[in-house]
Amino acid sequence: MDELSNKVAIVTGSTKGIGRSIAHLFSKNGAHVIVTSRSLDVAQNIVKELHPYGNEALAIKTDVGSDDDVSNLVDAVVSKYGKIDILINNAGFPLTAKYWDSSFDLLSIDDYQNVINVDLMGSIRCCKKIIPLMKRNKSGSIVNISSTPALSGHDLGAPYTIAKAGILGLTKHLAKEYGKYNIRVNCLALGNIKSSATFAHFDQDTQEKLSKESSLQRWGETIEVAKTCLMLSSDNFSFVNGQTIVVDGGAVLL
Image 1 (cartoon, one colour):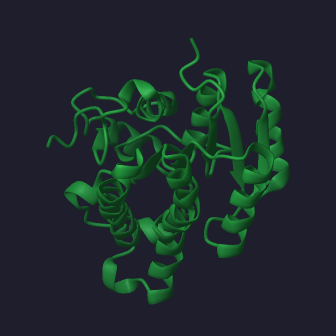
Image 2: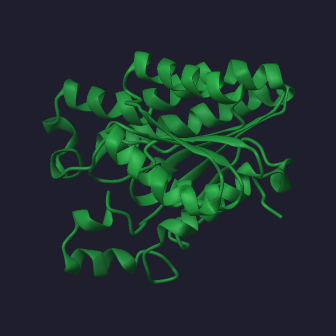
Image 3: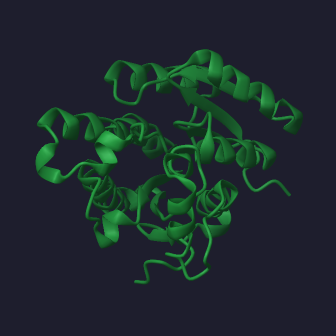
């Protein structure tokens, strides 16, 4: 049985890496997936990839850093389907050496705002627009994507760590405030995942070194993140709310 049969799921940043894996797995499990990207052409290509699963998918050009784009996204989905069952806040600011390798004091305020506007405020924008619909339907599941530096800290990449720490607080607050409407909000804190956004950022020696950080002695695969998202989004986990699930192969142990 398809775990997400006839569910309408928005997956932000869903054209590569983790987001693409989530889009594929959700569509395979019966969901109508809304593929978003800052490029409509790229999003439409992913929709074509999803066609063999036999479930309708929709491509919508969206920059989660834009209020208007998020409003247009939600309005378009509601106009077509009349509801939104699942939101996966996956979109993130592009990881570059400037933002990841620079010391806290060497980054400008604009640098911090650039990352926070997408990684944190993007999730806030989507939740703010979608939660009223979920309240009306008295049902909904939101999964926010954070990272293990938000839990354990890191000596570099301050804008990323700070934004992802905000995601943890957002998750807890929304779970507490909106649980009475049967809206579940959970979070994934990701470790070293073999995605285009992270794995390709490092040279081979660094990739090997980072693989040893987890007790499993390897990088995680994007499909492993997608499976965890599926678990949290399905009705099989209907009593799980406000939790941060660490997906890092046993590097950060709480």
